Length: 261
Length: 222
Ligand SMILES: Nc1ncnc2c1ncn2[C@@H]1O[C@H](COP(=O)(O)OP(=O)(O)OP(=O)(O)O)[C@@H](O)[C@H]1O
Ligand SMILES: [Mg+2]
Image 1 (tube, chains in turn yellow, red):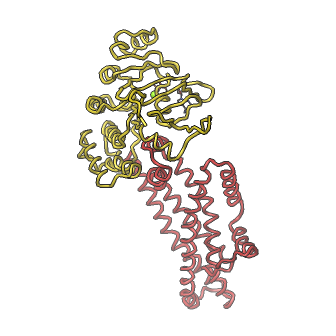
Image 2 (image 1 turned 180 degrees about the vertical axis):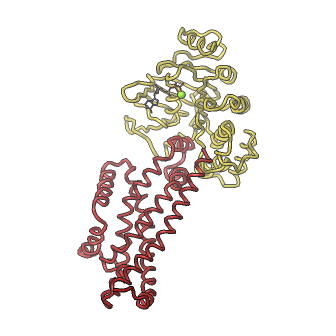
C-alpha cells in the first residue's frame, strides 16, 4: 500500500450526496497529496461539513468513490460491483482518518486523560502504560497537562476542544479533519485552539482538511485553499492566489463579503 | 372479628420467611428484566427487518397481556412442550420477560438521550460496535435510567403476589395457606399489607433521592 509515492493520500471521484430531494454535493473530484493542508471555505450550506463527514464515514455517498492511499473507503469491490463495506476492512481504512468536531464531542463520563487514552488502548491495542504516557505528552502539548483528571464539564470550551484535538492525535491518523473547530467557542478562546493547529501544521506535516470561517487562519495555515459553493469546488489554488487574486467571480464575491464584515 | 395480636405474632416468623422468597423472586426478576430489556432494545436496533418486527411484536404482546395470564402460560403450557421449571424459576422468568418488555422502552429512551455527536466521536475514533456500546453509549445512557429502574423494581415487588397463583409460596401464598388453616383472614392479610408497605415506602424514598441527586448533578454539569 502506498507503493506509488505520487499516489494521492485521499482521492474523491464523482462523489455526490443528497439529503432527501436536496443535492448537497454534486460530483466532487478531489485529489489530496500527503502533507497538504487544505482550507475548505465557502458560504453556509455549500457542503463543506458534508464533505468532511463523508470522508469520516459518518455519511455514505450515493454516488462516487473515496479512496485512502489507494484503498476504497466504506466500499468493497465484489467482482465488478461495489458493495457497502463494514467490519475489519472498513476499520483498517478508516483508522487512517481522524476528526475534530465543532462541538468537541468529548465523552462526558471520562476524564480528559481517559478521553485521550480510550482509543489507543481499546482500538489500537496499546498497553495502558504506553497509552497513558502518550496521552500525558499530548495533554502537555495542548497545554493541559494539569487537567488530566478533569471531566469535560469542568473545562472551558477552549480547553475541551484542545482535549478533543489531543484525543484525535492520539490515534495517529494520516489525515486529520477539522470542522469549524472554533465556531462554538467564545471569541476570547478561539486563539488558544488555533494556536495548537498552527503548531501542529508547522511541526508535523500532517495532512489536514480544515473547514473554517477564519480567513486569516486559513491563509496562514493552509498550503491549498478550496472554495466551495452549491456542492461544487469552484476554486482550487494556493492561498496567495485564492485570497489575493481569485479567478472565480463567486470566490471574489464571497471573500469580499466575509473580509469586509 | 377483632385483631388477634397473639395470633399475628405467632404467624409473623412464617410470613417473614416468606418475605425472603418474595425478595428472591423480585431480585431475580429484576436482574433478568434488565438483561432481557437491553437485549430486546439491541435487537430492535439491529436493523435486520424480520428481527426488528419480531422484537416489536413480542414487546407489544407482552405489554398488551396481563402478567397473570403470562404466568399461567409459563406454568401450565411450557411443561406440555417438555420444559418444566421449578416454581421459582417460572416466577422469575415470568417477571423478567414481562418487565423486560417495559424496560426495553426505558433503555430506548436512555439510549436516544445520548447525543448523536457521541456516536460520531466513536466512529471518528474508529471504535468497534462493542466498544462503542459498552464504553461510550451505555455508560452515558444508563445512569439517567436508574430512577426509572427503581420504580419498576418497586412495581415488580408489588406484583409478586401474583406468583401465589402459580403456587409459589411467597408472602401472599403463605398468608393464604395460614388463613386456610386458621380461618382467620384479618391478621395474615393485614401483616402482608404492612410488610409490603414497610418495604416499599423507604425504597420509593430512596429512588426519589437518587432521582434528585442525578438531576442536581446534571444542573451543575451542563
Ligand atoms: N442530516 C441532514 N439532513 C438534512 N439536511 C442536511 C443534513 N445535514 C446537512 N444538511 C443540509 O445540507 C446543506 C449543506 O450542509 P453542510 O453542513 O455540508 O454545509 P456547510 O458548508 O458546512 O455550511 P456551514 O458553513 O453553515 O457549516 C445544508 O443546507 C444543511 O441544511
Ligand atoms: Mg459546516
